[in-house]
Length: 335
Ligand code: ADP
Picture 1 (cartoon, rainbow, N blue to C red):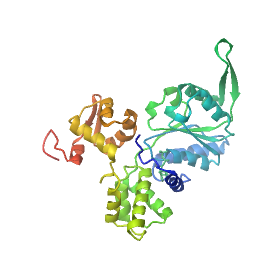
Picture 2: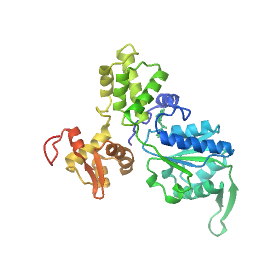
Picture 3: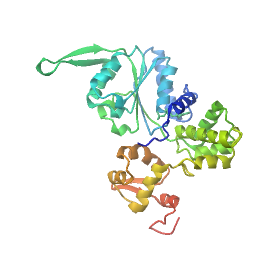
Picture 4: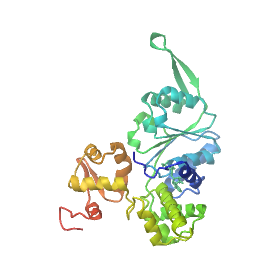
């Protein structure tokens, strides 16, 4: 399964944790979302109630988990972390919800992957802070109502379109996180480099930013790889462009930050399907990756940088995609 910069092991996870901003003020970019969240938290604080439920959508690594942690931190509430795939039955959710303390922030990552029966239980819980627990089977089955402590749900999803409407409607606030621009990524890198005690000249920061696929998690990861490279091949402090290039070439990121799966999708689209249009299912089989991953992780970035278009008849490659792969465009000369 595609990682999009997911931490690979415990040490990486710990470093990622250490690099997380803990306040909205420290959170780079996403200015509009930050302002909206600030208002939401301020209002809740003044009225001394838990904040409204929050839905965060967007590709992996853009800061959804970080924002959930910030919501808990800024409102001085405990945080509970869970995820859709861990909630297989309504019972799993009942156990989780009934153990929340008043005002707790509950983060459910990949909320679109929860069991259907749990989803229905969640509707009532979000609205009335109450659930009905079914006891027994068949004719003797009864439901026992259970009051819950009021809580704030922060749901994260890579595609809010995958959420059933009744669930989406129960969030008081919905935000879509966008890819970060180069200046914002440079800011993330500068902040992380300072924390890691690595000296990064501005040009090196810009080079890492350019290859980070618009994603802070990837920026942080590439920064750590450059640091590793410096520890082994240099004096571990100053990095110049050549060093950054050599370090990053070792990993499968190309000059504009596309990784192996991005390139596989582009390659199939351009070479195998002659630029499209091709359906998502066909594309997914061609590269051997789940359609959901392609749709929620790969495509948003390729569309954002203008390499891919989505039409009613399927996905198409743009002339820019041909140029990047070094393939002549059928409509004319090599661009
Ligand atoms: P998601 O939950 O969307 O997959 P995370 O919140 O886990 O993403 O973010 C991944 C990493 O990227 C975190 O370790 C965090 O340090 C960094 N990060 C994400 N967004 C920002 C941001 N806006 N400013 C600074 N660092 C960020």
